[in-house]
Length: 172
Image (cartoon, rainbow, N blue to C red; front, side, top):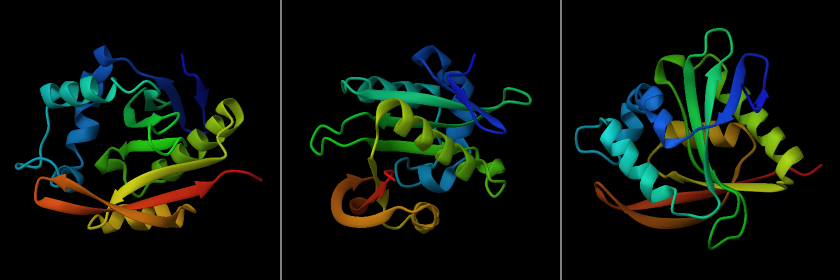
C-alpha cells in the first residue's frame, strides 16, 4: 500500500479523488491559512481548486503521509521534481495535522521523504519558500538544516509578502 515507510509513517502518492481525506489536515493549520484565506479556513472546493492549478505543472506531485498504526492522514507534501525557473527539486507545501505538532511527525516525515527522494530520484539539493512572517515554519526548517539563500515577494491575502527562499544540501 505504501511506496515507502518510516518507523511510524507510510507515504504514497495521492490522487485528486483522495483530497477529502486531507481536508482536516489542511484546515487544522489555521495560522498558515490566515496568510491565504480571509476566514483562515478551507474546504474541499478550495483544495480542489489549488490541486487543479498545481497539477498543471509538469513535474508536480503530492504525497500523503499516513500513520501506520491506524491509517490516519497525518499530513501531505506537494513538490516539484524540477522547479520551472530554478531547475532544482522544490517543496511547495509541507503540512502536518496541527493536533499532532510537537510529537515528532514533522521531523520523521521530512527526513524519511528526503532520504527516499535522494535515494530514488537522485535529489542532491532541495529548496522551498517560507512566508517571512511565519516564524514557526522558519524555525522548523532551520532546525532541520535548511539555510536561507535569497528572498522573493508574492502577493498574498494581506498584500505584498516577503518569502524566504531556503535550501538544504542532501549530498554526502
